[in-house]
Length: 266
Length: 221
Image (cartoon, rainbow over all chains, first blue to last red):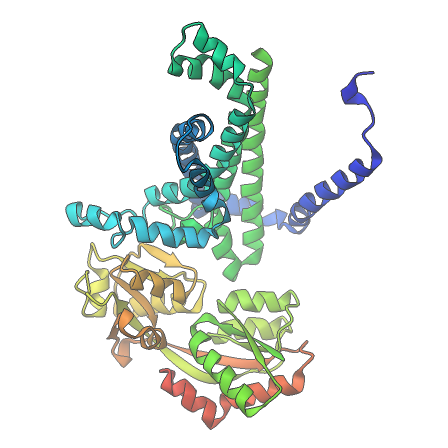
């Protein structure tokens, strides 16, 4: 018998089932109470389609930005020995513990038109970031990037460095080792990090509404639409949550599928 | 101990009223939960353990009454809108009409909450077409954006401008074109502290309560 097929200890099974039930029950409740009849009408509403499109576009851009700068950051944190490295590691996780609304205020203080950096830009150009679609991307990147950095950094630290050393001894430069040895080994963790980051960006609410405000079509993403619909039409809010849920699930499954297949090829 | 659910625009004055009430009724402490009136009304429907509900609009209170959360209510105060700008007035705003000027960044409440509905009515009455950069979840969020200087103007309540002190500059709206909102208060039907809750409601409606409300800028019922 293959080891993977052996029966797991029953105590673990019970606890695992409890955990799964705990995670699924609220989602199940959402499905049970969803106003299915009004779902098609809601989906046809331009405001809902705008919010959905905006959510997907901003989450994709935020994830791309987080990947382009976050993977190098993870690599530096895992592979380069520099003073203050533990502090830098702790600081990277800070947006995870910060309530997102506080993150939004911090972004305003940094990048708003009266902000530490944003003030300079505003004085020079008269342009300011808050209340724009770009601000949504910034808020999402700020909140979601740590997920990617931590996942990738953890994987890098867990690797057997002998493969990279062997590559280097065979004459490959540091960047070549990164590209030909490290990154391929990293693929599954990178995929997990990207998926986590995307999921977090898609669901981002607090930092977005604080930093980017709520303007339909420009900064109103699905989570904002859901929250604001709760004020006057809870049924619509449930339906909107459902849409967001289905779309997230579809995207996550799709991504997983692609990466899993790629894993099998390599 | 009684728990009072109150609209976020009542935060400062109710905190004060709570202290005064506790001083007059030793042994009874008042705990508050502030939020947008409609959110609070919904939480009541879901069985939130509150004893008193004070809403920023009659419509929201009516929703709570219809849902059976509150039996009867009485209006204890009124409020009118006012324009708030950052103290240095970056958008050169001096009257309501300036909010319709292009390039002026305006924040309002979202239409589903009382202050947002009020702002929309205000603009309609004045025949103005205002494109806001943000429709915030509640009035305090609008005020925050003004205080941080990220918007040129926000439509808030008179009482918010008063409470913010020097942090914002207020521009009064002439009474004829202004929009007013009423604040009803009532005992929550499912409350386990009916007597104490009724006493708190009576205190808010008393002349002492009205004085505190007037000092904060609220109008009489």
